[in-house]
Image 1: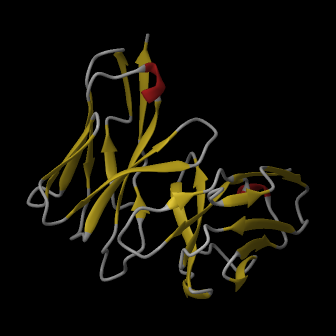
Image 2: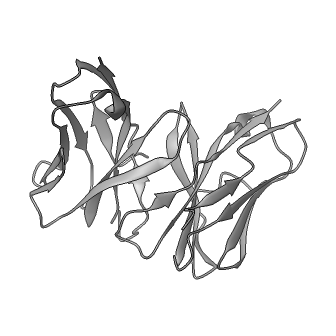
Image 3: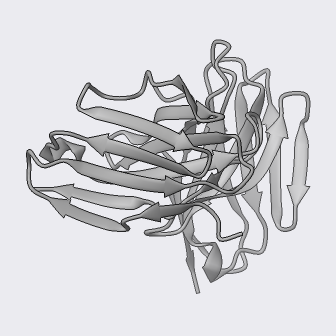
Length: 112
Length: 113
């Protein structure tokens, strides 16, 4: 079964606005990662946050992690048309196995 | 580095035929993963290797699927015989270790008719 569940499934905003995507998971994790997938392409690793971290930044990306609520959020500030893509969270550490399990993703559309 | 290289990019085959997907990981990466992506099931981990040894193949759907890694620079995923429900995008990814980000290839879009 899927470990991470993204919310919303789809998000459409205007260029320049901020986009927030959420991810919930079910079991204890070692770390949580966010990936981007442009249409017809492979996934690109964006950022990794460890279970003992609460917030992490990378350029226009801000990720938070709340292990008590088993949830994470990805914030993209000052969105651009090029940010249009699907975004996936992925977790590892399920029942001792360290393989990475992906959620279903959020489809983000940035309107010019 | 050219990244993770997969071939072919697209494959259309008839039901019952054998299909072989290929992957060249990034040099020096000790881990190689095969994922399958469909609209219904999302991204599923099929199998992963560490230092060319299969570690976890619990995601391989059935005996029709097999994967090999004869050396550190090459892996194959074979489906024999193929069925229409195998139609999906198959991704290969590699990483230096577990617990860090993976580098994905561009994928192979498989269509079984």
